[in-house]
Length: 263
Image 1 (cartoon, rainbow, N blue to C red):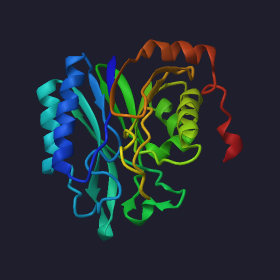
Image 2 (spheres, rainbow, N blue to C red):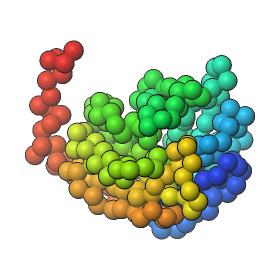
Image 3 (cartoon, one colour):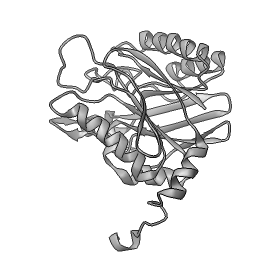
């Protein structure tokens, strides 16, 4: 399966960002991509007041993404914000396209490095997978990458790949952590991890997470197969579902688990 990681920089205007999604999806479809993955906060960047911008999954912005997916014959995965109780929002990944309609609410909220996502965001509580052409793909968002249990749960649910959308915070050591964590999660669960970050912004970084770029696709053996640099880039990759079975036969970390010891 050919996928595309759309490493772009979004701003505070959802309509402008929807236009970018349309443009990048058409580019990816022209290059033969079946699935096109956009970063977290593709609807509106962090540092924006999210509650006034949040829309339901049947709202205009999500419908715009559906129209783009239908027109290009692709499955589009894009980060958006949906309303939640008490003036908060959920940090949602919409996955939509021919034969696919699902959404994932970010489970692990980024209360770290001086930022408190939980102040404005309601956490999700369930894992989500989608089937595209007989291949099961799981969804995850940014800070989720620090929690190996989620990726093992994806494998247990039959996924051969996790699509990870991020708006990774900049700072000392953060690029090393990004690559280390993505590769580690692929090894933990012996699945593909396709991780797309917001591109590094041209101006100085603010207090809210923006992005550092360096999206990457990691095979189930933990090796980097494709990588981007810091600036906006469309990264194409081929995911081989059969390779997952081969790696799991040789490296039996899922079969050799002893979860009863840690309960």
